[in-house]
Length: 176
Image (cartoon, rainbow, N blue to C red; front, side, top):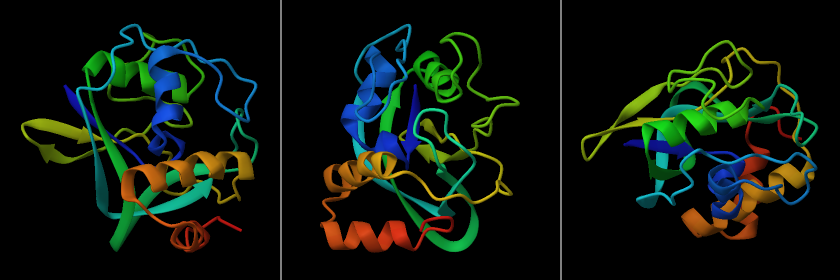
């Protein structure tokens, strides 16, 4: 089992469920096949990632505009949501984040847009991992439809009001 630390659109349980079960996210035309094991997470909880800052960059095929990534920044705290999933499910999420077929990559990522898969620590005997881009990714503002998924997840996981969400996202490098 692995704790997947989601900080972007997968903060939203509805959005993350599409990676597990398959489907097309609201505001997108891309259909995701879902994980080979479509089981729901064993546990879900709010989390903050220490010393990594939220930023937006690269170019999303799904959303248009930049997408969330995390990069080193002393003292930074990035809001996240932990999902306790199997190693196989996590690898399938990594694949789908990169528009690849489930089963085509391992849990360590590879040479893809979202190819960096750092270990953030351990919780209750399980690795905490996330999926991100290279820290020097070119900054680019995200689309509103992408931000809507992140905002929903911040409300769900952290109980943040809209004003706090707006401030949090606006302060991320690459945001408009």
